[in-house]
Length: 440
Ligand code: SAJ
Image (cartoon, rainbow, N blue to C red; front, side, top):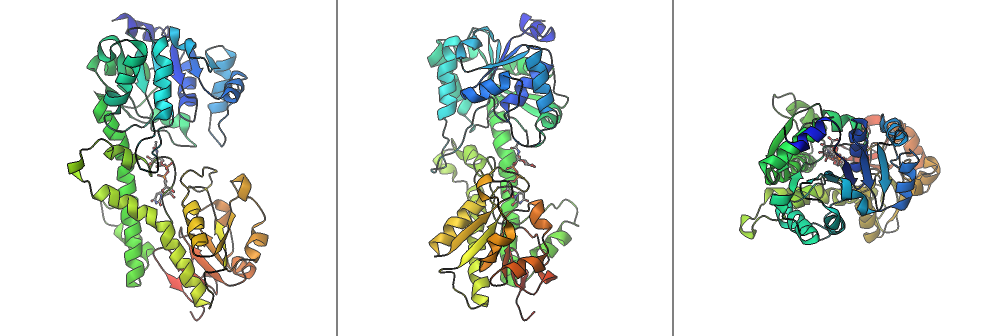
C-alpha cells in the first residue's frame, strides 16, 4: 500500500478544510471524529473564534453537529484559523466555498479563485485537493487546475491529486447525509479518485463511485437540473389546469397513482441555493451550437410562477371590485422553503417586487425571518388580500375563517395548496386552481 493510503489507514494524514459553512464545517467534524487532525480555514474571524470555542455557528436544527464539534475541538482534532499557512502540513485539502451564478447566469467564482490563489503557495507536492462545491462541468480543468498551477508552480496532474466530489447535504440532515448519501468521486486522474475514495471511506457508509472529474461535475448539476425540470413540468400543468378550469391537485393525485409517475408539487416558484443556479452551471461550458432548450425553458417556467401569483392577486381583487393599484397585499412567507429561515432566491421577493410594480403595497410576514416576524392578525388586518407563499407550519394551522375575518376584503391566493378552497366564504385563487368566488 502506498504511503498516502497507509497514512489514511492510520489516521496520520493531516487534513485541511477550506470554507467552514454548512458543507465544510460538518465535513471537518466528520474527519476529525474519524480520528484525523483537521484544520479548518475560514475567512470569517467571528466564525473562527466561535468554532475554536467548540460552538457551532450554524443556525437551525442539525442533529449531532453541535455535540460532535464540541468533542473534536475539545480533544484537539479540529481547530479553525483564517491563516492559509496552516495548510502547509495538510496532505488532503477539501474546498467547500460558495459558487453562485451572477445575474447573467454565469458562474461567479470569485470565492473559489481567491481560495486557489491563497492555497497555492502552501501546497506540497503529492497533496490530494478535493473540490466539494458545486461547479460547472469543465471547471476542474479550466479553473481549478490552472489556478493551483499558477499559484503553486506545481503541475496539476503530475504533482497533485485533483478531485471533484460534489456534496449532497441537505439543511437539517447535514451529518446524516454526509455519512449515508452515495458520492460520485471524480478524479482528474484515476489515482486521484482512488485516494479520495480511500479518504471518504473513513466515514462514508454509502457507495463511493470513482469516476472522472467531468462526470462528477455533470452528475451534481444534473441531479438538481432534473429536479428543476420536474418542478417546471408540475408548474406548467398547474397553468394548463387553471386554463381548462380543472384542479391540478386532483390531476396530480390521480396521475401519480400510475406506476413510474412522480409529478412534483406545483407552486409559487423555485427558490434556494441549488435549483435556481445548477441548471445554468450545467450549461456554462456547453458549445453555443448546442442550444439546449428544455433546461432554460424549465427555468423560465419556474421563474415565472411568482408573476403568475401576482396575476391571481389582480384577478382576486377584481372579483371584489378592487384595483391592484393602491391595494395592500399580505405576503405570508418569505423563506424559500417551509419551516426554514433561508431566504436565498426567495420567490416571495420576486412577488413583492412585482406587486410594487403593479402599484400595490406588499406587507410581508414570516415567522422564521427576523425582519418579517410579527403578529399575523394585526398585519393582515389592514390588507385587501393575502397570498400564501410558504407552507410554514404556523400558516397550515390557520383557520381560513379567521384569515377572512382579519382581511379588509376576503381575497386569498394560495401559492402552495395550503388551504381547502371550500373552507371559507372567500375569493380563493389557488395556483393550479381551483377558483372559488363569493357566490360559490
Ligand atoms: N419546490 C417546488 N415543488 C417541488 C419541490 C420543491 O416548488 O415539488 C420548490 C420549493 O418550494 C423551494 C425550491 O423548489 O422553493 C427548492 O426546494 P428543494 O426541496 O429542492 O430544496 P433545496 O433547494 O434545498 O434542494 C436540496 C438539494 N440538495 C442538494 O443540492 C444537496 C436537492 O438536490 C434535494 O433534492 C433537495 O434539497 C431535497 O430533496 O431536499
